[in-house]
Amino acid sequence: MTLDRLWQLDSTNAASNSNFAGANIAEACAPSGINNALRALGVMVAREMAFQAAAISASVSTNIVTSSTGLVVPIIGAGAINSFGVIPGEQPDAAVFRFLEFSSSASISHGGSIFLPGGESIRTQPGDVLGVLHEGSGDQWRGLFYSRASGQTVADSLSVTTITNRSLSTSAISTVTLNAASASITAIGITALNSVNSISASVGEFTLLSAGGRPATVYHGQARNSAYQDLGAILPFDDSIPQSGEGEEVLSLTVTPTNAASLLNVRVVVHLGGSVGDNQSAALFVEGTAAALAAASTNLVNSGTVQTIAFEREISASSTTQRVYKVRAGSAVAANGKLNGDNSTRIFGGVMTSTLTVTESLP
Image (cartoon, rainbow, N blue to C red):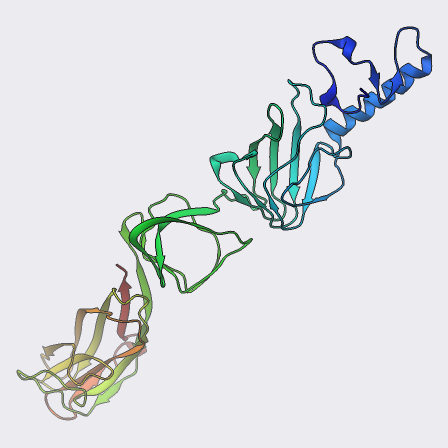
């Protein structure tokens, strides 16, 4: 047999290595035979130890041991790979290495003839490198390492519970595999993710509902009002629920819950002044409902003072429909209420600010 690859050389029986690329190196051969054999051996060594081959395309059978391949093999294209090929004329104890560099998002299947690090299939990214070693005989390759060009950990599959609309429920176990170079995930909630690994994707409206068993929150925003405002309408101080037509609107915030099972925490802080002995009140409303969701009041000591009213209300989201929350405030006596100041003037030059803040606690 003509020997033209290092893997064909017998490491235990030198006599078997009788010719290199057809050069006659028998006893008493012509000097040219020795010269040609040494030259051929140099080619063999260079190819297997220091040579980068021409690029080959990713396909179901991507042969990385053809007559022209070397130690480094560029892989182009986004094909699916489940074989790296059989090595022709390989000695049983030969160790054939290949370093594969990918320029696209090919997919490599674990199992069968390719055994990848961590036992997981891989979706490559441009610049990723895979090191493989041929094992035994036939089409059997072992992944020694896989290096992402980005430096990130390889994680292409996620074992989760069954996917339902917009969330991952807990009814049955299945596996989700992201097989794109980058996954675009829109309006998806993950009810629980107890893994220490991470998900990397191009994400739009992505909500992590629970990580490692700890509930997460979504901040929906804060309405702020630092203006000095007259509160001309009465907000009665009696045993009736404040109504949406009472008092003056001082704060408003539009909120769209991300999950119907969430709880919304609404916090109100208002600074009110007015006349001596007058009760100043504030109430929280949701657009479309006449009765207040919550209310609080304070009694002023004198006309030159400002009192702060602060209260919270936890509300069930119930749906993901957009809604507007409002705060109305007023005095029990007409035209006596003031926002962010006392009965006659603004206090603290505009940095006294009344606020309405909403956060969402995800289930």
